[in-house]
Image (cartoon, rainbow, N blue to C red; front, side, top):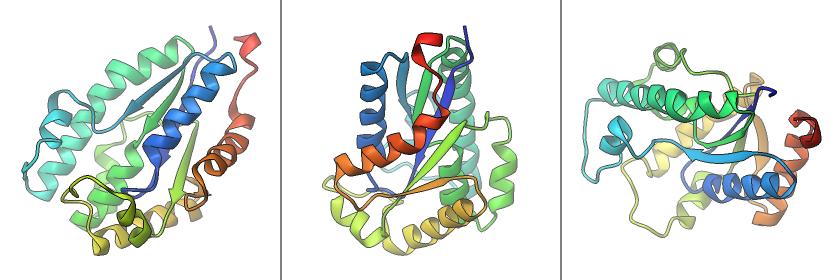
Amino acid sequence: MNKGLLVALEGVDGAGKTTQSKAIVRWLKKNGYAAKYTSEPTSVGAGKLLSKPGFTASPALEALLFAADRIGHVKRVIEPGLRKGYVIVSDRYTYSSIAYQGVILGDVEWVRTINKFAPKPDVAFLLDVEPRLALSRIKRPRSRFEKLGLLEAVRKIYLDMVAAGELIVVDGTKPPKQVTEELLAKLRPFLPNPRCR
């Protein structure tokens, strides 16, 4: 079987990553692809700890915990799925650590180094939304990361990654269906013919 495809969706909190990741997976399945939605942080091990309300750690330890969670995610979900030929759509991936922990620690390169083990996605998208608008979309209580100043700095790092060719930018402020269509238009060139799999 052909190697699968790893797709990552990135953006600040409230950008629409979960909605769009799941919409892409639905489209893929409908069009004959074996596809799987996954997300970070995960719900086990270090990911479960990171998601606990009130959890705190030093910025460096937090960055290491996100990397540790990613190791488990890669070994448990991503690599087995790719070997089986799945299109894996990850709602957040290494770029989230680079942007968020890079801002908090003030050391983007160190965060890149501790995440070098993670396979590079075949394609990665940035759903770009101005942080003030993104925060207005969040209905649940905000997490410790959902602060305007932090998200503005995070967005800048994401846009630097777009400029470096690491991420493909999509305007996340458009209506959801329009965003999905634009994502799929940019994803299609990377997809093999499902009948050839």
